[in-house]
Image 1 (tube, rainbow, N blue to C red):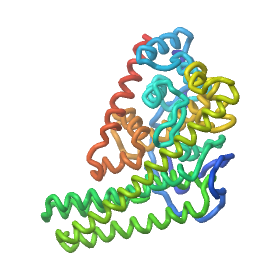
Image 2 (spheres, rainbow, N blue to C red):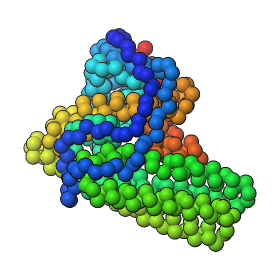
Image 3 (cartoon, helix red, strand yellow):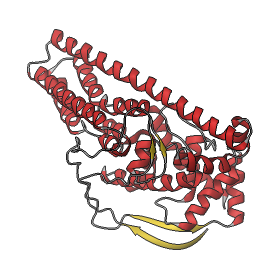
Length: 391
């Protein structure tokens, strides 16, 4: 690989608000982009680093390197491996990347196996499996297909998290109520309150495609979550009486499960709506069965869909998003104060599990994230395999 130029990333982040570049969006229902006071408040400031920490480079991959990468990825049963390699390689030549192109290829493979027009059960789409919220949060302004079902599912996904924290803490008290467990519960409760609004920046990023009612519901849920956590604090202060703690736990569990069910159903409906719209446009434009188009020329079809339906289907736009989002996740890993030799693994973990889950796991509010922990091991390992494939 020819290293053409290097740029140092400086980790001096002071984030007090989310700035999102707005753009056209397709919505159902009565959603309209309106300006209103944020319900999020001031976001936590990032930890500033005194020295440059991350090196980003533009890298030229030769034709031989591209062949070697594609050959290796074909052994992983990747769809159209050469086109995937070329897409990432052209991005690597055009802009500095926060991580090597092999790392981006490893993420892309983990997300789609090269099925770049796929839609996930959570409504993520494209080469990088981006959600509308993540796409907007990174400042991209292409066309998006967003419906009320997506908004409802995403709101429930984020706003149920504090209820999950309250359930986890009260579960522990029900299993064993001693002075030591109550002390540990108080510590966990502090973390739960600190993390109560984690992930709400993603909801705020949806302001261009959501209405005031959406944000009013978020504010209501935030107030309810804080009241629930404070109620738990009072229970702990009273010694966590068994009957009261059991009643609290049952009520919170019921609310959590209801929100989870709404989230799953709404996201499933949104995914089906997006797939149906994708297929209808492909059939009309290419005069072929959409399954055939997706199998035989997904990159051409993806660029078309990126223009007329949703930018997340465009492989070139998703390659750019992938680089930007990995840069964001890398910075989040640095903010967590993680050891440098684990930075790549935790960057992958944050890409897969999101800060909303990873921070809770590190705080002890989530015991394990099995899929994310596998992801954080396998992505760097596959990246290393791709590096070795190039000799």
